[in-house]
Image (cartoon, rainbow over all chains, first blue to last red; front, side, top):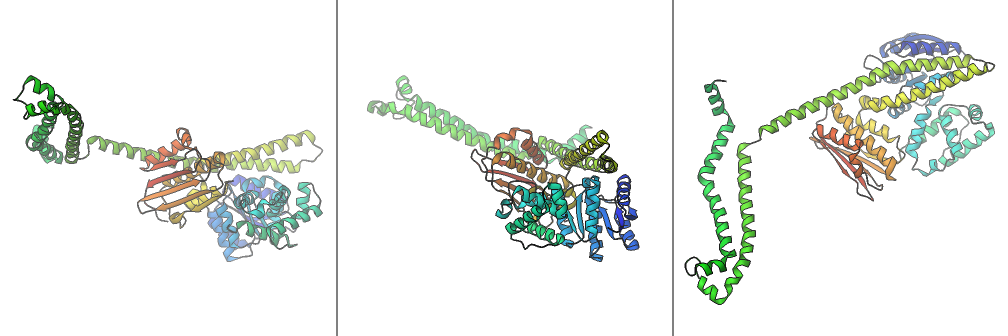
Length: 219
Length: 331
């Protein structure tokens, strides 16, 4: 992975510096650190980064300025990879982000950054155009779908694979985590796509989007 | 207050004239009517109940046709008629007294006590508003303070963990343990803060907050939020009351009811917001009203001038209806 130029927006200075530190250690360059939404917009327009990491809630209103800024940056440049960190799982926030466009998008609970190597891997995935959605969001989407037969027919193993796929993990990573072979992972994916009535794809990103679109569809 | 000021004040008060009118009515028109009703009832009842005795003691004079009745034997029927008269006159006197009370209430207007009651209610409303503001402040303080610091701590532990080589057995174990522990505390703190005041309620309003909660329910939730879905916003205490009522109903339905579907509906008629939460479970939640959950919500609704109605007969279904008089803020 080549070094990424990253802008971080987070109002807690301690956390911001911690993030900068782990990203620097992973070989990336933090070109700007800002603490509010207007500075984020300015910093991105100035330094044209490869990726933006932003907190949802920031001064001055401590509402969802970070998310608004991210959506605005996305409207200006639909290809700009955006990674949104949130203190809470907000289905509404996730929906708004996913509706903005389905590529190069990350939405994780802030807690996940403390699993340092997984977080940096997720950041790199998003920079490469991938989609990483917090397992908690996926879990809730699954719960929402529970009364539908296809989801109910998934096995526990297939569910495990599905949530990890939504987190943007590769087959190899899923195999490592679940202590099964990569072939087994492919088989699970094939099965669950069959059960959900989705067309399979070898493209990681596209298949994540297919699953998310399916989960978010009403009914 | 001087005598003159007192007299002026009394003369100006509507209450004075109302009381005077009531007294005049009582002294002129009303008392003969009431006396006639009471005395007439008593006399008629006495005459019929004790008919045979009266005829026996004072034949001829006191009871007209007494002689005839006595001879034909019908005189023994009059006590029976008397019982009927007693019952009927009891009702009659009751009606007259009720009318007199109605007149008094109409003329005298609301009693001073009601004024006090209004003041008490508005101070309770202020308390609730203050309570809501405090909760939001606490949520924000925790978010800006403890949560960020804990997150930074957890992040540092995560970084330390990454640096350790597998060779450092015991140290590695300790740091891994501390890291995992810090993640659990973060999770607990997050749940706690959400319970104090849910962020999404402030940011996105009641419809989004309900959708968010519904997303956590195992029992499927169907929502028909009408005006709320189109972004109508209400004062904080109202939105909070709706949120926490739904939250409690959802928790109960998921925990005890064995329901297969929860339906939440909302409507606003311009004056009053109504939210109904229904499940098709086994019911029996009424007995839980004595518990703190529903009771607290009922109190909250009461303070806002509204009410919480619970219907949950054994065997179900359970229905909670929250009604709060309120007008929407700008959406």
